[in-house]
Every structure is written in C-alpha cells, then in structure tokens.
Length: 240
Ligand SMILES: Nc1ncnc2c1ncn2[C@@H]1O[C@H](COP(=O)(O)OP(=O)(O)OP(=O)(O)O)[C@@H](O)[C@H]1O
Image 1 (cartoon, rainbow, N blue to C red):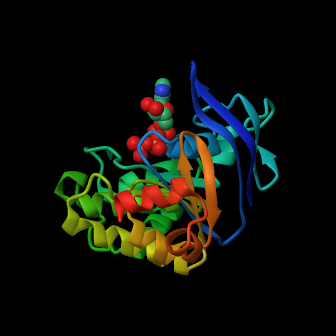
Image 2: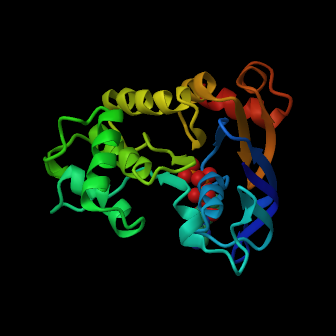
C-alpha cells in the first residue's frame, strides 16, 4: 500500500504539492490527471524518493520514504518508474539494457537476470528483439523496453509518468496495450496521463490535480461522468 498523507512540497517559493493525501491499495490503478504544472510528475518523484518533501509523509508498505534511516535504494526496488522518455544504453542490446539493474542492484547471476529479462521482454511483446540495439526500435518499442526494464526488478508498484506523451499517435496504442495488460494482471499502478479515454478505461480511481492540490478523486464514472468540483469540469471540458 502507498500512503500519502498531507504532503507539502515546494521548489523554492513555488508550492508544487499542497496538502496532498492519497492511499493506493494493492492491486489498485489510480490515474492522476490535471493541467500542465499541476504537480503530477512531482508527486511520482516524491513517492519513490527522487524528490524530497517539506512536510507530511509517504509510506510504501509501511516504510517512510523520506525518513532518515530508510534504505531508499532498497525501497526503490519495489517501485518501478517509467518516464516519458528513457535513454537506453546505446551500446547494449535490449536484453542487456533490461538485465543491467537486476544484475547490478539485485546481484542476480547472469543466467537468472537473463531469464527475468527474457520473460519481461516477452511480456511486453518484445521477445523477438532481445539481441537488437535500442536505436533499431521504434518509439513505442523503446517505451515497452523501458516498461520491461522496470518490471525486471520485479516491483510491487509501477509509476508511469506520461509514458505516451512523446510518441507519434500511431505508436501510443501498443504502449497502452502493455499497460492495460499489467492492470489486468493486478499490478498496483499510479499513472500520470493525458490519455483521458485510457484513464477512464483502466483506472479504479482518478484524481484531478490543479495548482498542487488534489481537487477531486473518485471512480472514473464519477470524475468523467459527474464531476463534483467546477475545476474538474472545466479541465475536462478543455481536454475532452
Ligand atoms: N526541479 C524543479 N525545480 C524547480 N521547479 C520545478 C522542478 N520540477 C518541477 N518544477 C515546477 O513545479 C511545477 C509542477 O511541475 P510538475 O512537472 O510536477 O507538473 P505536471 O503536472 O507533471 O506538469 P506536466 O503535465 O506539464 O508534466 C511546475 O511549475 C514546474 O515548473
């Protein structure tokens, strides 16, 4: 379970997260929607400790992410994160890229890491690309490799930060299909997304952010069909 309680986060004078609270249970898929600069990406960075917070708390399976004594590297192995773009190592094959962290961080043997890497590359539909170099992959395939790379750490949680935003429209579908599959398999996921139809389809709950505040959270039916806050309705009217 991910428990976010009364989190405040600023960059200098700029308040980016303003008293945000959100609990994500095991197996839940929560999408975060909102306009540019509303704090969505920053929240994901705070969840896996890539950004500090000023106050409040974030716990992952009961462990305080931002506490002094926390082994953040160990905790991060539970939390996969995929960004808009990931620059793979160009001199390593797809399989080598995907198995690098299991080998270096989890200290898996080459055979073990290769087995996990193969499994996850097959999982995302790249089972035939193990030995090619990343430059030979399309943008959609590169994003699926990034997902396989995160999955190869066998995380309990997956955070997705606008993973399709940099893709040509015709490549978006294949990446969403991979995420749809993970959601069906019961992966606990937090997605920051501009793909409203996808958020509506896969999410258990959708949270609307504006100016660092979580204005509203509810089922997709509530948020998209009957938003309670005028800010949510205005935002949806501007993007749908
Ligand atoms: N490292 C940083 N230093 C200073 N300001 C930052 C930093 N990262 C983000 N910000 C600012 O914090 C605010 C929130 O940014 P964030 O990326 O979380 O928004 P977002 O909702 O994900 O937006 P988008 O949809 O455009 O990605 C923005 O005003 C942004 O300029």
